[in-house]
Image 1 (cartoon, rainbow, N blue to C red):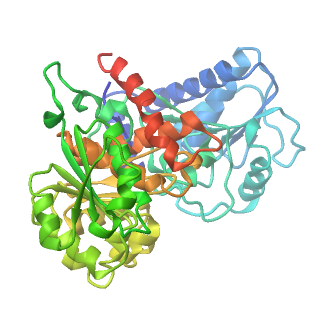
Image 2: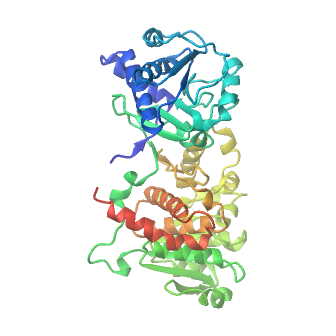
Image 3: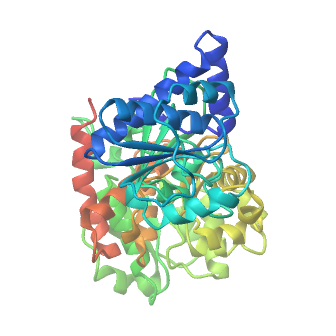
Length: 483
């Protein structure tokens, strides 16, 4: 299965135009879209009274098709028009509806509402009757199906600037848009169904994260594999009173398949770390030169979890950069460069991964998140600026590469909002890179597995649980790798 592309509003509009220019009438595309919505409704809801709310554009035209097709199935349907249809295709669709119109302001008594007021191309906040209706519908999202996007939700950002419909189901066409995957849009859409209406494939460097994007290149061991061939990963520990985070990363790296994982520890913390380690190996260091020597022959190195925002952490990052190992730079190892981000960027390359949460992101890339139209644009610009992979954490984690590729994680779990979960994620990423997976795909795979593991556990999850949950997810991936 191919990676699931995410297309902008302009890219979808261009695909529509190409189809029409190639000979498919616009009204035919509208009929296909309406049929897809009607089918999705019939599959998920028992027959009930339906109110279809139609706007003046092509989104409203889709709504007239939905109404006609549900009525033909025997559903009791009423249509309300926010305004008269304006486009030729919408007028044609409205002309095919023979059920009359209900006054817009009439009491809302239906059991299901189809929101076809405005689509993803709306570039202004809802106002007037549309805003009032959106507010009313938002109180009952379980009874709302949105066509393309919930009205009031900008298709390219997913960030409404006024009243917005909240839906239990959104049916969109050809491909998801940024609004379907970025918060808060992702949550406002409810379940998202992507319907094929016969448009040609379009190129996009933006995809939705999932196994179809990277599973064929996942680094499974071969029959003749041994521990030295499965990747050498090191994790740098913090001082004696801050060692747990690095151990979480190391254990996560081991669980994700790295053959040899070593915790590189300041000498004063050796005894503390030794009492908690089993399969993870332990080696001490006291200077940056000793750290550089200890990591000289490894495939990947993780630094940052509870490392401390100190000069030692800064020089340790620079020492690891000199080894040629791929770096996963997290937490304190990001913050320590806040006064001179260029010092960090100067030693990075496309094999390295930065894993900031929004606060850490702002320390390395001041103002970029606020100035960018969305998190995808911010992560892409950051990756180009740093010349490294950037994983911007959140409920809609975005992974971006310097070459413009970007991936959005849509399986984010609220159970990951617990101390130490990011340390585990760093371990997963470092492990996959150590095993030979390309860094961008390793970050994508790790983020997806991390979230799946959290959902597998659910309530009560703590970071220590995550490494032990990973094998169940890995087993599912392994069993599904061929089909």
